[in-house]
Each structure stands twice: as structure tokens, then as C-alpha cells.
Length: 118
Length: 108
Picture 1 (tube, rainbow over the protein chains, first blue to last red):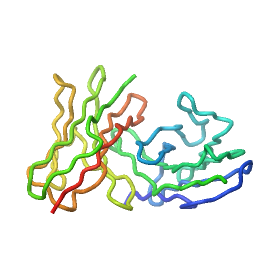
Picture 2 (picture 1 turned 60 degrees about the vertical axis):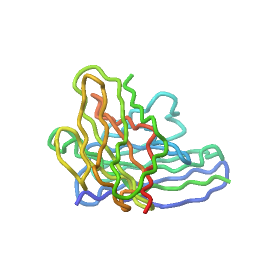
Picture 3 (picture 1 turned 90 degrees about the vertical axis):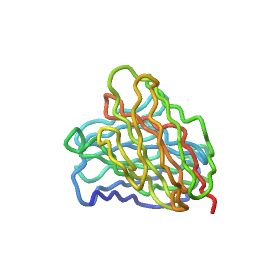
Picture 4 (picture 1 turned 60 degrees about the horizontal axis):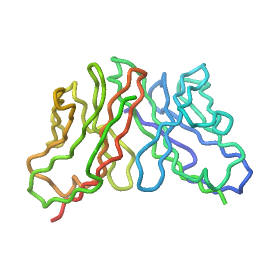
């Protein structure tokens, strides 16, 4: 159980276009989803925390107008990279949790999405 | 701000040898700590959490509040243990703070 999927698994786009990445919890309702970014050979960097039905909370240094996050349901969060540029090329990973002590505070991770901006 | 340090980016040991992956954290209060693992071509997954005080795949990790450490140990390494390991304290806000990770390679 506790499977998280991401779509697409990889995407190539032209500079200036927008790209949407979906994160779904397949067999549980996720009260909170997290979006991370991972550069090659580096650790995960948290970008934002997304709670269903409310605005996402962005980490310091992450542009909220650049990385739009929507968490419209308990099983789906989307990350839209607007006006993408080559420096946005990265591996984007989402995680989901049903949260709190009941969920053991465990985050379940998606497989990641490789974004390449030409 | 809460910080976590994994001093070794790379660690290589022979099969059957003991393994210790180091993790030090800075946090005031009672932290909840996790070890996550990423095997080749697989997603990140939870290995163990300190509150469970359990052994998973032969790995254990003890929280040492005096030394602010949460080192991951296994007495006899196996080839399938080769992976990327991340130590991650949980912030009050339910956010995980990932260390830079240690790539463990088990040599046959």
C-alpha cells in the first residue's frame, strides 16, 4: 500500500513554455504533499508543502509564481513550472503523507519527473 | 534552523564487514529522525525511524541525544545494501530535512 505516482516520468520542453507535473496518491488520501527538487548527485531540496484545499507553503528562495502548486483533492497535487528556462532542468520529486502520528509521519515518495528545458 | 550532516559522501566496505553511516543533527527538543534509502533505479523509501526502535534489513539506528547523532549500523554488510542513504530529521512543521546523503557501496 501507500503508493505515489508521478506523471510524466520525463518531459522535454522548449524554453518559455510551461510544464505541469502530477503527483497522485493511489491508495490513500494524502492530507499533505511535498515537492522536492534534486540536482545531479545532490540531496533533495524541499520546494513547497501542499495541503489539500489551501495555498501551498513555499520554502525560502523558491518563487511561488514560477512554481505553481495546486492541491485540489486528497489524491492529487500538481506542480506547474511556468515559463521554463534551462536552469529549471532538474529532477522533481513529490511525496505524500496522511500526516501526523497516525500516519507515523512517514512520507511516501513518487518516482520523480525528469524535466529538461531546451 | 534544523540541520543534518552526513559527513561521508561515499562509503565503501566489503561484503560481511560492519557498516556505519554517520548522521549528526542540530535540533533543540526531541527530534523525530528517519533514515531513507534509495536503491538503484528505485524511488526513495523509508528504511527506519528512531521511535520504532526496530531493525530493518539488519540495520539499526540509535538516537544519541548527548552526541546529537543518529548513526545507521549493520553488523554484516550485504551486496544488496548498496544504495544511497539519507538521514532526515522531522521538523515541527512535518517537513523532512534531508542530509546530503551517503552512497554506500558493498564490494564482493
